[in-house]
Amino acid sequence: MLSRHIFMCSRAGASTSQAVFHTSTVNSVLPRAKPLDEELPPSPTPIGKKNRPDTQILDLSGKRHKKDIDIIVTDQYLQQWYKMETKALAADYLSLCKSKLSLFVASTATCGFLMAPVPVAFAPLAAATVGTFLLSSAANSCNQLLEAPYDAQMRRTQSRVLVVHRFSPLHAFTFAGVTGLTGIGLLAYYANPLAAALGALNWFIYAGVYTPMKRSHIGCTWAGAVVGAIPPLMGYSAATGYLDPAAWCLATILFSWQFPHFNGLSWNLRGDYSKAGYRVMCVTNERLCRVTSIRHSLALLGLCSIAAPLTNLTTLTFAIDSLPVNAYLVYLSYKFYKAPDAKNSRRLFFYSLLHLPLVMLLMGISNYGRNEDQKEPVVERITNGFNKMADSMKALTTSLSS
Image (cartoon, rainbow, N blue to C red):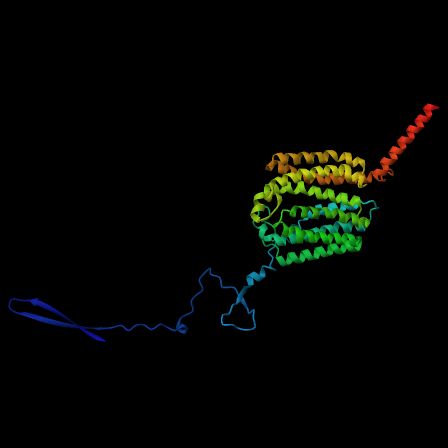
């Protein structure tokens, strides 16, 4: 379209004036057409921007509906089940199975084997120790596998191998299965089926009862105490093939020891346990936490000084030797009950780590220091002592009368 603009320029003169008309023609610009996509050059990928990971679209139904719903699973999420970023595999294995705790548990099984009233055989003893260690490793691996999301919320556990992805969940599950089944097999083949059944039961209680119960009920501490009491039964039954009152007395000692030990440990971690949602005593009932500590410390005093000699687990010498060891535990538990602060709870916890090895050492000394008279049950020894005393009194009376 053409448009004509007229500009008039007037020039003023003396007598005449002229009007000059100038015309200018301006062409209108046509609108530009949008180029096709094929005509555009490829846009360069911005620096630092990662490509979208490959995805897989899973069709969950055979029929296609009007409104389709597709689940997108990225390779990154699938790799989390099997990808590992470990730098020291052996050290990570030891961390996964909590090697120090597993060695401690295996030592209680060894103590139970040595306290049995039978000659020591190397193969069953080795099977009881190694099998208990493997089963404890399997239980600890399952525990970390189930609690990884909650361990990430606690300062004490936020550096565990599953939390920082040094182990994959699939690898941890496989490790737990291999170690657990191997431990059961060792106990069944080299010891006896009773020891293997106790080991399998303990694995189930720890991984299937105690671990999920920690987030739902305060009774989880009692379930954990049962777990701690079974390993000496495994060692005792591996030696004898049966369980008698002496074995149950030993298990009860381990059961009661768990309470001052765990309560002293957990008291300073109340904030972390509460943040992670654990329903342990120190979070839900602080008074019960203090009361059970002193209650079971007193129970240990009675078990070691009265029940152990009566069931023929130990001698009267152990009943006397263990008195100061247990009395100091009662004292620390009482201080923790009266003043439940960080200092007293820490003292109770660290002394509990020394208390149990001392008790087991004194048990072993008393058991292997027995003579033929001491091997008799304590009730029979007391009865025979009274009879000998009565005979000596009769002999003295007869000599004086004559």
